Amino acid sequence: MASPVSTLEQQRSSPAVPVKGLKRRRRPKLTGWAYAAPTALFVLIFFVVPVILVARMSVSDWGLFTGDRGWNAPENYQDVMDDRLLWPAVWFTIKYTVVTTVILLGLALALALLVQESSRWTGILRSSFLVPSALGLASASLLFYALYSPQSTPLGFLGIDSFLGTPSSALWSTVALIVWRFAGFYMLLLLVGLQSISDDVYEAARLDGASRMQTFRHITLPLLKPSLALCAILCVTGSLLAFDQFYILTKGGPDNSTITIVQLVYNMAFYGQNNLGRAAALSILILAVLLVVNVLQFRGLRGRED
Image (spheres, rainbow, N blue to C red):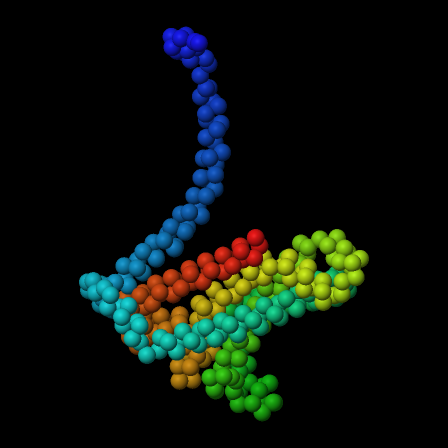
């Protein structure tokens, strides 16, 4: 057994780790931090700081023209829950989200399957389906607003007064705009997922005698679940935060029947109430709901993959 003295002498005589080796080990970490720093700074300035400010405003008597007049928690949250337009706006937003998600994802999947195989017209079809995605949502809403107006040439030719005169027609007219605008974008995402599926899997299914419907049900859909889940998360989040299209097309009408939850935030802050504290309280509630919805979607996706 070695004595403590000899062990100490061996430790002293052993070569130390070179300083250059330590620097080389630290260099990849510093490089990683350097790459991540701009994104972290961007998130800090444009997300974390605004969220903290909104949280501060949500517990304050903060008017649009008067500024901060002191704490009033939880009065803003109570006023939000007592607002007569809150639950109609929540119900309409949920209905719009469900309708838009089902129609949009179904149509996008059909378009992706249509242009999956390379053919003579595939490039033209892909480009034509994707062109509306290059147009901004506000610009597309103005375009459809002109189309839906009673003075529009197509509507006048068909003898239709307006597509925005009733709550039902206003909803479906807005859904048509969103489907036209985003179908090509979600088609592209699903097309990438379809092309990532190996042809060997389909060949093995054909050798086993599987029909096209069986192949689609038992091979295409299971392997396409990650892409479908991504599209569903984007579509649900975007629909819950819908504002531009309804503000331009209907402004919440007729009779506040198409007002969304985000448009209610806008009305509380800048239109009628001019109360930034109450609008901030509703914004915090919306953020909490979105976090819960996204967590549930991610957990559902992870469970299905496992």
